[in-house]
Amino acid sequence: MARPKIALIGSGMIGGTLAHLAALKEMGDVVLFDIADGIPQGKALDIAESGPVEGFDAALSGTTSYEDIAGADVCIVTAGVPRKPGMSRDDLLGINLKVMKSVGEGIKEHAPNAFVICITNPLDAMVWALREFSGLPHNKVVGMAGVLDSARFRHFLSVEFDVSMRDVTAFVLGGHGDTMVPLTRYSTVGGIPLPDLVEMGWTSQEKLDAIVQRTRDGGAEIVGLLKTGSAYYAPAASAIEMAQAYLHDQKRLLPCAAYVDGAYGLDGFYVGVPTIIGANGIEKVIDIKLDKDEQAMFDKSVDAVKGLVEACKGIDSSLA
Ligand code: APR
Image (cartoon, rainbow, N blue to C red; front, side, top):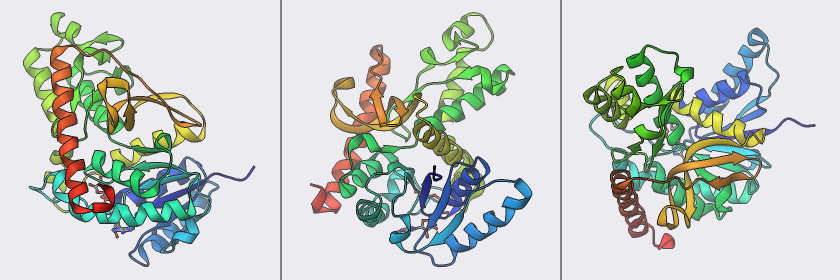
C-alpha cells in the first residue's frame, strides 16, 4: 500500500516542525507548501538529509504550487502570520482571513478528500472560514487548539504535583483564546479529579487557580519569551497526534475546534469540544454535562468566537 500523503500548508516554524515529526514517526510522505519560494524546498531537503541518520523511510518535497498537494490524505494548515508580543490572537484576523481564502481554494481544487487540520490563529474563526472557503464536509475540517491547551495544563499540573505527565489528564473547552475553559472537575492525576486533590491537601485552590490562569495565558507566555514569533514545538506535536488518530482510525477522544450542530445548545458553530477522531474525521462530538459556572464560562467563550466570525463576515462579504 502506498504511504499516506501529508501536505503542510505553511512551512514556517510550525510547518517545519510538523514535517520533522511526521518524517521521524514515518507517518507518510510529506509535501511542504509555502508562498515563500525556497523555504519549503530547503526545509524538505534538510529533513530528508537527516533520514539516513535517523533511519526513517519518508519522501519529503517542497513546493510553491498547489498542484503538488494533489491527493493529500491530510492537510495541516499553518499558513499566515503569528503574533508578536503585545498582540492577541484576534489581532491577526484580517490578514489571516485572506490567507485562509487562498488556502481553502487550493485544498478544494487539489485535495478535496483530505482531513484538514487548521492551526492558524485566531483559531476558531479561521477554521470556520477555511471550511467555508474549501467547501469540504464539516467532519473533515477541524482546528487544533484543545490538545495543545490541555497539554499545557497537564504540563503545569505535573510540575505542581511532581508526578509524570503521563498520569495527568486534563480537559479544556471553548475557544482558543483568553476565554478558554479549563475544566478542573474533568481533569485528573492518576484518575483523581483535581477538586479532590485540593480536598486531600495535595495542592491549594489558589495554586490551582493560578495554574488555570497560566494555561489560559500559555500562548502569550511563549510569545513574550520568544519575542519574534509564537510557540511551535507543542502546537506541532498536538496536530500530529490528531493526524495520527485519523490516519490510523484510532477513535481518540481529543478536544478540538469542531463543528458543533445540536450539542451544547449550538446550531452549526466551530468551537473547542471533546471529539472522537477516526477514519471518518470528526466522528462524534461528546456533549458533556456542564455545571452552572462552567456553562457560563463556555457561553462567554462561544460569544467571543461569535464576535470574530461576525468580524470575518464584515471583512469578506462572500462569507456573509
Ligand atoms: N499561503 C501559504 N503560506 C503562507 C501564506 C499563504 N497565503 N501566507 C503566509 N504563509 C507562510 C509564511 O511564508 C510562513 O512561512 O506561512 C508561514 C507561517 O510561518 P511562521 O511565520 O513561522 O508562523 P508559525 O509560527 O508557523 O505559525 C503559523 O499558526 O499558531 C499559529 O498564530 C500562529 O497563525 C500562526 C500560524
